[in-house]
Amino acid sequence: MRLSDKTAVVFGCNGTIAKAICKKLSQEGCKIVVTDLKKDLAEQLVSEINNAVGIGADVRIEKDVKKVINLALKKFGKIDVAINCSRIALLKETIEFSEKEWDTIVDFNAKSMYLIAKSVLKNMIDNNSGSIIGITSKAAKSGPANFSAYAASMNASIGLLRSLSCEVRNNNIQVNALCPGYIEHEELALGAELTGNKSPDKGIYVQFSPLIDITNEPEALANLVAYLASDEGRFITGQAYHLCDDDVTYWRNLGLEAEM
Amino acid sequence: MRLKNKTAIVTGSGRGMGKAFALALAKEGANVVVSDINLVEVKQVSEEIKKLGCETLAVKADVTSKKEVDDLVQKTLKKFGSIDILVSNAGVSSMEYVIDMPEEKWDFNMDINLKGTFIVTKAVAKEMIKKQTGKIICIASMAGKGGAATQAHYHASKHGVVAYVKSLAMELASSRITVNSVCPGAIKTSMQDREVKWSAEIRGAGATSKEIREELSNFTPLGRIGQPEDVAKVVVFLASDDAAFMTGQAINVTGGQVNTM
Image 1 (spheres, rainbow over the protein chains, first blue to last red):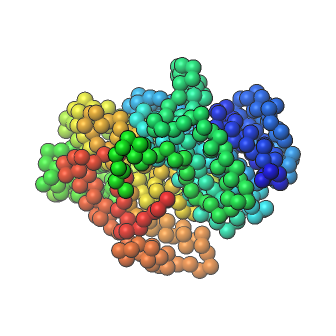
Image 2: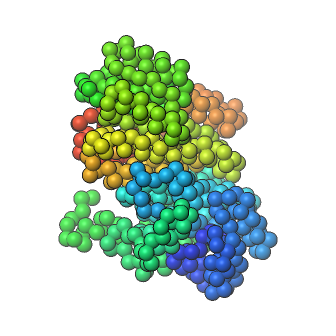
Image 3: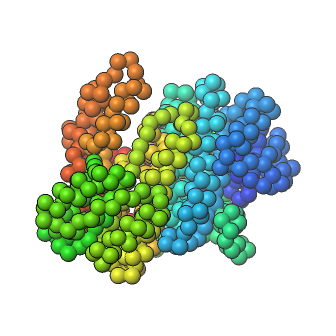
């Protein structure tokens, strides 16, 4: 139980990755406030894990984010870990993207990270301790076609986190991003819902490399989150990690030597 | 004259780097549409271009306004018939720590630097697709690759531009349109003048603008602050056929400053 003295707030729990993260933190003894745009999703997850409370919140609204932080402080007295799993995606050519759709994607994915970081920092600075983790996407690095707002918003999150890591360097607070290698069905579904588009067919997701094993990635990411949340991860900050299925291994597996 | 008979739009070209880009493109023979929010400055730059013997147009446009950007595109098409080159350059910055950052400052940086890039490139890409050719150059920043205290919003917006450009490049590749971003380092502009002043204020304890400037040079391996013309030469290269086989890239023009992140 590496996190038995820790308290975490997790924003956005509709996806498989977010659920795996919450479960892992709970298994490690962490106390968690689980939040989602849809309150019932948060409450459902809370019923499946230990030491957790659920609350509904829209991460695009500062008042809502503060409400979550205040609940965590009231319940547990401090916040050691803040994790943003709020992610939505919309598959559409840039020239067809409306300004309203752009705003929805960018606010949900990137502004959320700013509002969460800003709201949670005071308590972490007071405690001279903390870990902030943004679940972004490998799309931030690769820039796939027909996901330009998604890629832009996720890299914006990384830019924010990198800068923030510099700001809190002397406060013993680590700030990192993780970059899953695929877009979950839940991201596409919620993205379509919030922008008034047609919902994707059941189970549809988008993978950025043929080698990603999406049955294992949520758990692998959750392990990395637990590490970054624990005292073992103290010296890691300002990083944006993706897991090992990158383009280099892809080419190698095809029998072609990657030019390094 | 590498850009004879080409038509270029440069947003944010009333001053600073944008002005240098407009002049450099004109010197290579391009017709240049000068655009910014300050019509007086836009007209002045346009006059300078006229003196070089080039065709030019001055249009006031706010990149966050779809209406004004559409108007910029239509005026350009009316006068020149096509848009061959777009330099999406309009940008702003401010400085505050995340913990003190008002939501308006986040929006200010993200709306102009990132959403403005989306609005302008989208409007112009539609026209370029009709011609199945074009060069789009977005001015990001060294801030698109690293991190720095007091500018998390600016870094977020510029990271956004770098990723956006990669995605857009993939979408427009089949129309033979190239899309690249340029990441300038410390460049002498009015934006830098403001940032140097703010840095001195934030740092306090009698820090002077002169000291901050010296630091900027010292952090730059080539040992000097860059000039807008340093960046303009790279923009002209990307706008020319010399860069025909480059797309989706983010080119550093930083005097050797690198970010390993």
